[in-house]
Amino acid sequence: MKFKTTLIALLTLGGPMGLLSNATGDEAKPASVAAFPGAEGYGSMTPGGRGGQVIAVTNLDAKGPGSLQAACDAKGARIVVFNVSGTIDGDVKIKNDFITIAGQTAPGDGITIKGNLAIDANDVVIRYVRVRTDHEGDALGGRYRKNIIVDHVSASWSSDEVFSLYHNENVTIQWCMITEACAKADGSHRFGGIWGNHYSTYHHNLLAHNDSRNPRWASGCGFNDYRNNVLYNWGYQSSYGGEAHQKGDRRTPPIEFSAINMIANYYKPGPATRTDVKDCIASPSSRGDDDFGGWHVAENYVDGFPEVTTDNWLGVKGKTFHSLPAAWEAMPIHQQSAKDAYLSVLEHAGCSLPKRDSIDARITEEVRNGTATHGNNGIITTQDDVGGWPELQSAEAPLDSDGDGMPDDWEKKFGLNANAADDNSSDKDGDGYTNVEEYLNGTDPTEFIDYTKRENNINSLESSHGK
Image (tube, rainbow, N blue to C red; front, side):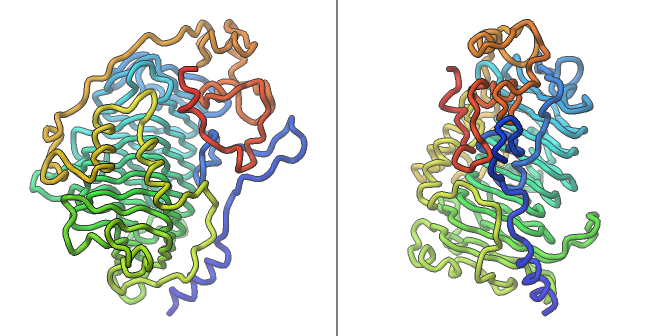
């Protein structure tokens, strides 16, 4: 078959792209570093807003001066920090390239967007925000872009898909929570999301309380690596899709194959999971004989089904796919066993900084205990089923006299000038991260660390937060 021959050829060429290389030996000029320590996979090498202006969000307005939307509308490289916590009531669209949104800087309880967050730009870094929408449209979504990493984001309550990022290139979705999809007016949907981006990585995410599309793999999605994710309490469908061809593909040239690794993920059926799909890892789709995707499944743990855990192919339903005898050689992550990943995801996934809100705290406990407390066994219809949006408390932002994104106390601690805004884009220790990035990352701007070595590419932000 033409597709199979083409796929084998692509797999031969489809090894790791842009691996984190070792330092060149000249510590003053390190090789490119990841977007932040702990960024992994194909979206990890975007610089985001590195070296650009720092823009502070000073209010919760939907638009206008001091708003998150105004920061997204700005042009040029920019790093967005928050001087306020709370809920932004309105949609946010990222329109221009090279942006880092650092939600971990919000004082108090953090930031929630009560609307949609649309990615319509390249080189985007989004960290530690919540998107809990109140209307149709993807809570978080974007297509036909490149170089994107979404890290520690909590998304929920859309009546379309909660989190759909597909037909992009070089994407990482990591340590996110995709939960509690809502219904359309006719009672349909409640879908987790559509994923599938050419050269992309998805790891340590939690998908919970969604009826279907956990995720749906896009047609013609190219090379996708999905591992160490946790799926809980799906309704009638876990993961499916992954056809070879997308009708009307706007990419040039179109991507006309799908190769999907599904490795070391944890599947835990819940109260809403239909009996006939409790053991289902994936149900590949096709629209004809020449439309089969390639799938590799291995090391996945299916709770309650030891025979499927032993032989994962028993959990792949249907015959409309090509089974790949080996995984395509993706960029490595700090991979765990499925059981260890389950514990890590429950501990750290979602918008965990400045702190988890009551929604994420409840859901992770439901996953841990195998329970569901709202809706129809955890599958909800509207946001009202779970009590709506929690009230988020703000706090006084730390003093930043020169407005460079680094608080005065932190600058003084590390020998920087709290009255000179131009020192935020310099790199005091020469490790590839600017001084303001060191603050955002919870690292020491005076200590050179070779972050291009995989063993050093670790997110220490949670353990350092507030210190």
